[in-house]
Image (cartoon, rainbow, N blue to C red; front, side, top):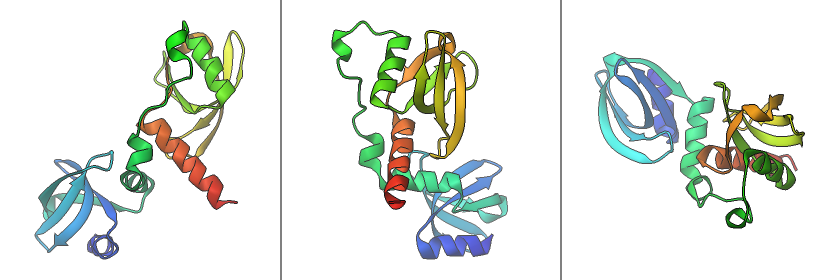
Length: 181
């Protein structure tokens, strides 16, 4: 554990620290055998506090894992992640329904989150749409391809057109595409 704390402090990288009192994200300011001092951040990457944590209460330290890298990514790209939410063109001039939003998302290749009647609220691009079902090119919150899913249109209760998570996924996908060129 000390090696990870030392590496995180030296490289000025974020860690996730698990204690009996919860999980804390942030940067290691200092530590000794008794106490860890951290500059903590929210899951949105916003600096929130400077706090001490009794090192004896720390059960896990995570460094450079997917979740920590995602929070670092949000912290380093606040304008893109937390910028103005895009709305579908013509929103104010149309009578919109969920099927109409799904159609529009497919036409403009908008990454959306589908809020469904089940616990599965996937992110992705709508590839095909019929009156009854849709084919979704799915992605995880980390921007990793997650296969294709077929959903019933009637199971889609709401469409999240643009939020922190959809913008983060889009930005991750754009950066990976640019890096592979």
